[in-house]
Image 1 (cartoon, rainbow, N blue to C red):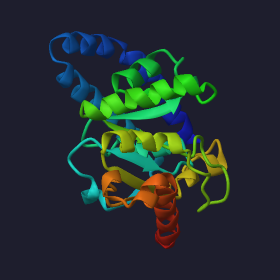
Image 2: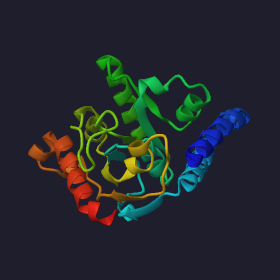
Image 3: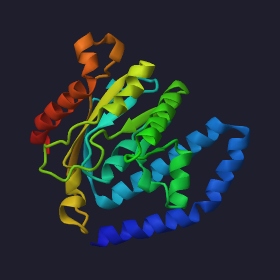
Length: 244
């Protein structure tokens, strides 16, 4: 419980004390948008790493060298709010996450998310959802990686299970030709969700799979690319269960 309280206090202070930082970043962006983006990335990564340090989480990372130095589409399974902190804190390049529309209402938090090129997906409105996918495609073309959890929501089922992937996310890769990098996450719900509201020290495993280029796949695999990536992640989390 002590760790949970510490994280809540840190988040509140961060969101209040960084309001002037957002203003400074806005001014920087008028003259050098790229410098502003990199600065915002590093500031948020510092905050995420600090929170992870409070949790006491121990992380085993496999295959990080598989990430090409180019804009990619990260695809991950999703069991914890901490999945975002664990993965975003490791991003080397500008990366925007696709979040649910409901997140677009938290003032300073929303401002930081937009500054980091996060997009908000309205799952109840297909027309607005398509606009989000089209914006993500533009981001990839402009050199910004995208990360999405295609299960659509956190999976609260048994460990090693996954919800079916939604195919819309994969249009980002098939329309741009960018690489898909699967991210397999093990044991992340054990940090917080499995014993809410306590936060416990635990060991998680993150594995980055080899990049998948849609144009290099055969026609049948490309047609079912969502199933292909889903199977890769499912097999990886089963394999890595022994490491936890």
